[in-house]
Image 1 (cartoon, one colour):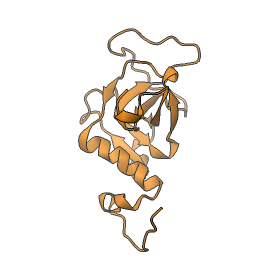
Image 2 (cartoon, rainbow, N blue to C red):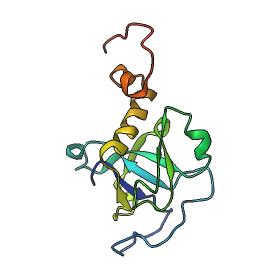
Image 3 (cartoon, rainbow, N blue to C red):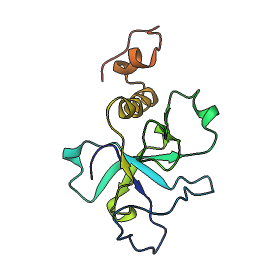
Length: 143
């Protein structure tokens, strides 16, 4: 699994799909996101799990105002089934067994940097202040 790849979360007891490309168009209709973008570095993804952020297709206009969300537009990412928001505050360790082994697509370049910036904002990583246009009112402390 590679950084920026998007995977579907398997339902309990569901067997992984064997098709080369995921054919269905369902994103889930409840509040629980059904898709995750892998954000952990490639060299850290060799074990049993990866770090991922869930994606949501609901309330995109509202989520555009949240700096802890990165909007991924279908028109800029043709492999996406729909535009969606990467919700950085819901970052978590995801077991590879929870994910369909075939990625839907991969987000790269400036689009993926916006996902990383949302994570940086969420944890108040001062190195991302310029990217997000956040005023530096107080001197950050190094950790």
